[in-house]
Length: 238
Ligand code: C5P
Picture (cartoon, rainbow, N blue to C red):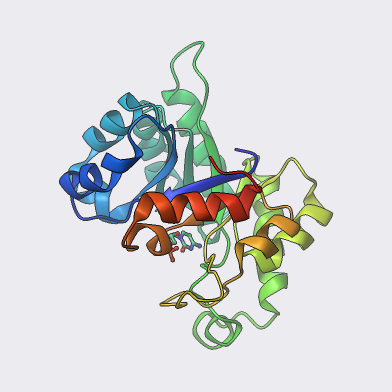
């Protein structure tokens, strides 16, 4: 996980993913399968990408009653992804149930997927949070609160923006994962993201991993774009 750049494969079909990945042949990537792709292709897309040697973040953001989340996670554990997630706003009991499900679904001797919780979406602003969720603290306080709850529930880390990663590390320790989407270079459009940060700032903030979608997937030359991102992110051309 440490210092990974996770590519968000936000595509509508397996065929589009196949086309996108052609130039990357022979490289082992860390990829994210989100709702758009999983709802179309189902578990088979996980198997296909694993077969190619890629590490998988299955970003389905589970949020339901504890019993439902536990059963769903039991099934997802069988896909043997590296990383899965839930919404922290589902509560501590729900997050504990997610872990129980993952443990129950992991084969004896196998490794349980790491499980992280979304705090506040990176597309949410302070104003939206205050007005729409009626949460009257700062965004950073809300994210830290959710992160603390997540750690208390026994999960491995959180999804947050780069702007909150530092305070989370200070309070919850370096081994608690901070996975950060909303990453944009200065020339990129923020699109629907609100709490954006550059890859340089992400690196200085010591986040565990960054998630990059459209800046790579929609670029004219995705491989070149990925290499440029890796240069900035890690200081090496991989
Ligand atoms: O295209 P972009 O780089 O904005 O993609 C970010 C990816 O990270 C998307 O797949 C989105 O679903 C995901 N994500 C996010 N914010 C979160 C959790 C996940 O943007 N809090």
